View 1 (cartoon, rainbow, N blue to C red):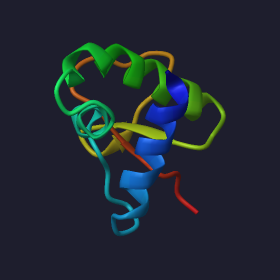
View 2 (view 1 turned 90 degrees about the horizontal axis):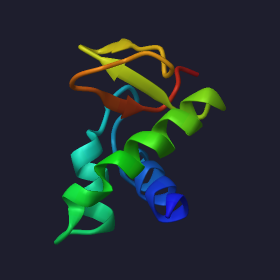
View 3 (view 1 turned 120 degrees about the vertical axis):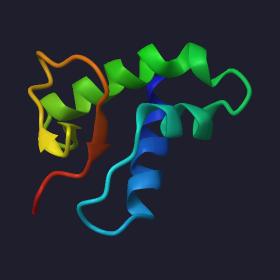
View 4 (view 1 turned 120 degrees about the horizontal axis):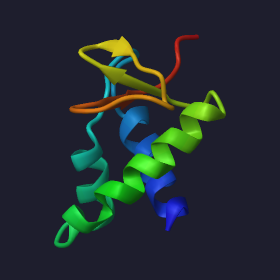
Length: 81
């Protein structure tokens, strides 16, 4: 399940200007427009894995968040160059 989610994350981020972010909901809707809610936990797990690898940055309130310890509303963006 993580391959389509990973592809959707990078596809959506690739269409945005540098420094812009996407929400987990946007990614889930891109993968499964009808049943997107059931994918939210999978999006989170995939994002954490990508953040651990340094391929993705998880943000809260526009600032980088620790992928091991974050709660609440969060977004994803590409790491700074």
